[in-house]
Image (tube, rainbow, N blue to C red):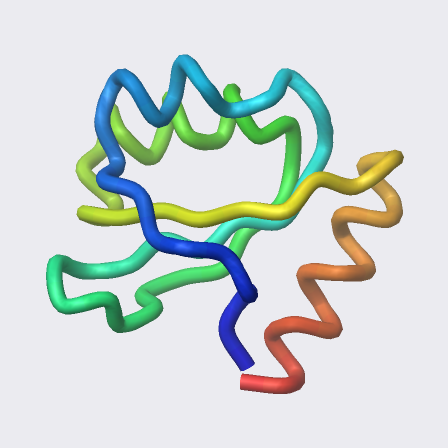
Length: 80
């Protein structure tokens, strides 16, 4: 089950607007298909994804802690 957030283009603007907080994110291709699911400090993770060209689009949800972000990512992967 995908995150219930709209896709954003994975660009500098999206990275700059990402919170400097833990969370879960999805990277997608240009058609909106999920390519990967990750977790961590969102802004840092998205900087890396942008630099390596890991996706065309992104969406995310915040979590209170890195541990909770990891749990949410695992749950999310299981539902896919």
